[in-house]
Structures are given as structure tokens and as C-alpha cells.
Length: 322
Length: 97
View 1 (cartoon, chains in turn blue, green):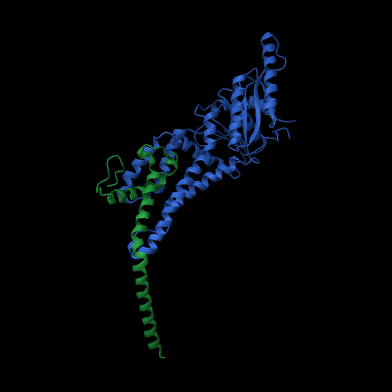
View 2 (cartoon, chains in turn brown, red; view 1 turned 90 degrees about the vertical axis):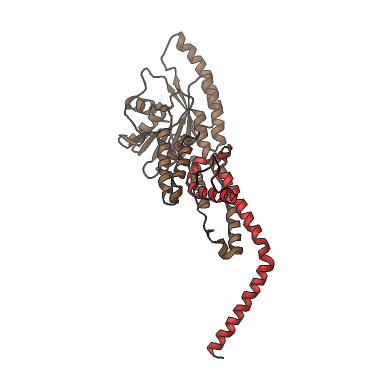
């Protein structure tokens, strides 16, 4: 099949594209998405980068809901601030029934305070991201995520593990409360009165933790998930990628491929390009040695701007094995 | 024995069993009752504290994921400050009353 992408890493159904700012991750993520959609897979391209440029690359306006941008092809740009507002509204709706009327105002005030705490937007972003990934296998066969610059993304990917651990601590505490509450009910009889049998707090916490575990299971599953590192053949990009590969591996997230972008094209001549090529060969040798465990793809610098389906398809052709 | 008689004897046995149970409770359970209650309240307060650590300036990384607990916990907070001898909610906490 002409549309076939490499079986090594780029064929996985959930791909994260990451790299230092400006190395071309958006373009490459879009290229892989265009190719997958053309191959007949229902594909969703997601941008979590606050500086959205997927709409620029595709040449289409996008919003915070998936927009159909071509046959089998949807794209969405997630705005953390919109997500945080949405999440807050949902929480208020969910707890409306269980809140005693005299506490409604105060509960809502507290939740509004939480909206402006640091971390709220990151958490909401993660929440949305979890939901979109949940669409894999039903709404979409492929989810391709153009991530924010590396540090931010790594935090986001480590989040489920850390949050699950913290909530695990709260669950432990809460279980002690339920054990003592049961003992109290046993000895107090009628005096225990309002102490209830089931504990809604414990149930909520356990449900939360289960969700973190589920998302963690998906992002660490190497049959379906791959992190794709994009870098340019320069020292700084290489050093950052080496560090990031170690971090990603530490979090147990499988690595799909490494893409070296903007290599001096074949046939380019002159002292400038000759100089670049010598340096690039050195860098490439290091890259091949450092990332020997993963498929490494090379994409040349193009003579044109990289946007629009035709150019993206051309870029994708460098990512096929055949 | 008639059915009526059986019922009478049965009731007598039940009454004796209840009396025994009360003696047992009086001897063994009652002294621990208040201790169990106190331990239960302490554990509940500790949970309240760990859920609202941010109010005391200690970061709570899961704050945003536990917002659904607010109605329940604010209710418990109210119960806590009343029990601590503060009929009105202390300044800086929740305005639960």
C-alpha cells in the first residue's frame, strides 16, 4: 500500500509528537495524520500546544471541538482555559443534586477559587485529553497528538502516575475512617444515628484513581502507543532529546520513532551546505548510535513553506519504510 | 406443650439473653465506646485536613480532581468547628454557616 506508514512505531494508534520548540513537530504530526486518514483510518489530530499552529499547517480554522477537515480526518485544538471552565461547569452540575441547599453558594464559591489555582488548567487539559484518547477504538482508529514543548508534555504524561499515588494515600486514610465508623456503629447502635453505611467520599476517590490507572495503562501500552521525538540535526536539539528519551522511558511510555527533520537536501551545493552537511553527518552518527533501539527517519529541509495537504503528503513520504 | 406455652418460654429465654447482653456491654463495650467514637472523629478530622491541606498553605496536588468531595467535606467541616466549640465558622475557612 502506498499510504503505509512504518510498522515500527508510526503505525501505532496513539502517537505523541514531541520535541524542542520549533523543530517541526506540528508539521510532522500533521503529515502522519494526513497519511493515516488517506489510508482510510478515522484519524483525530490533537494539539495540546498553547501556541496552536495545527490550523495554520492545515490551512483550516479549528476549535476546541473536533472539526472534520477532510475524509476520515478530524482536528482539534485544545485551549486549557476553555477546558478549565468546562470542567468547573461540569463539576458544579454533577454535585448540584447532592449539595444541601444551604451549602450550595459556599460549595460553588470554593470551586470557583479552585478554578484559579495553579495547576487547574493543566488538570483540565489532562482531563480533556483523557476523554479524547477514550475515543480510540470507537470514534477514531488513530489519535495523533501534537504536544506542547517537552518539559510540559512530560509532566502531563507523568501526571496519572503521580495523581494515582496521591489519591491512593487519601484512599488509605479514608478507609481508616470507614473502619472506625463501622466499629462505632457496632457499639453505638441507635446513638450512631446519622453515620451512614456506604461512604460516598471513598467511592468518588476510588473512581478517580481507577480513571488514572486506565489512562496510564493506555499510554504505557507499546502495542498501541508511541512517543515520536522530532529533532533537528543540531547540538542543542540532540542533547534535549537524549534527556527526554530517558525521561519518557522512565515513565514507562513506549518510544515509537525518532525523526530528524530539516536535513540539508541532496543536491544542494555551495560552501554553506557543504559545511552543514559535514556537521549533520556527525550529528546523524550520534543520533543513530544514541537511538539505535528505535527507528530513525530523516526528513530534508524543503524548498517551500510546509503547510497544506500536498506538502504534508510529501513529508509523510519520508516516513515510510518502503 | 401448647403453642401459647412455647411462646411464653421463648420470650423468657429472649429476655434473659437480652439481660446477659446488656451486662456484657456494660462490662466490656461501654468503656471503649467513647474511645472508639473519639478515634473515629479524629480519623475523620485527619482526612478533612489532608483533603484541605491547601487551606493551611500546604499544596494539594489533587485539589482539582477532588472537587466533587466539597459538598460532603464542607458539611463535615461545619460539624468539626461546632464540635471544636466555635458556633460560627472560623475566619478564613469555609463559610458554611
